[in-house]
Length: 265
Ligand code: BMP
Image (tube, rainbow, N blue to C red; front, side, top):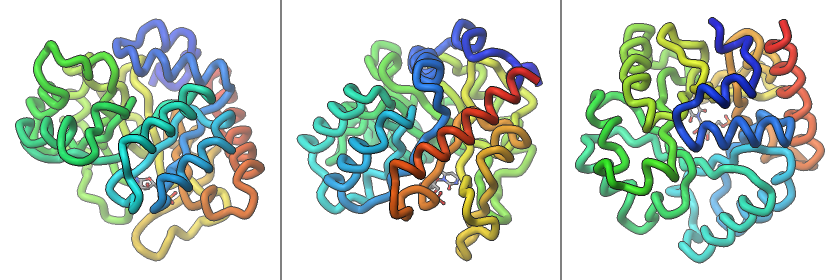
């Protein structure tokens, strides 16, 4: 798979999505391929975490619907931190409905995700038209300001994201390359494209056994060198640690060393 060995600069120039282009630039500038899953229930705490580990990460992933103190004013604060420390905000909403519903979930409701998310996740379950119409019609600003990350495979035991499913969905993603900036997966898809970014969750250096609720873990090096991850997603391995800054530096350094090794091999 050529994507795995191309330089980030080459991949940046073949990218068809402005958010993917930006992410390649951030990775190179910060020497980081670390995305932290800030799965905390307080947005104030998420902001604090982001202020401390901001320089080490390229993406901060959140689940807006687990926050107990959500407000758009606080999201604006988080956006300021993201701008100051230069990282992207990914809302891991895993949109999975018909396009007409998803558009309303993305733009409306309490969270108004389209106002603050640089990246969102979506399950391709509902078919290719859900992907092409995800952000609204062709005049929607979100087509430039937000990238879709398609969930092609899940990290959990016995996930239903079979090879056939992922293969078909990857093809749809390629057709909608103005919408799709990358994908979540545990391996490179056949229909791959070097301008696409692979995000791999289920990364934890301390635990090999998973979380006893179906989650499975591998190390940063395994994610990058054996599974094709461009970006490693680390949640509890970092947020539960007693020194989050030191832990972020360890994951940044391990992830980046592995990525550099893969590219130069
Ligand atoms: P942790 O490292 O604490 O297990 O967290 C993993 C994070 O990645 C969670 O936010 C989860 O929602 C997300 N995730 C995952 O674990 N597996 C997938 O296949 C897709 C995900 O988005």
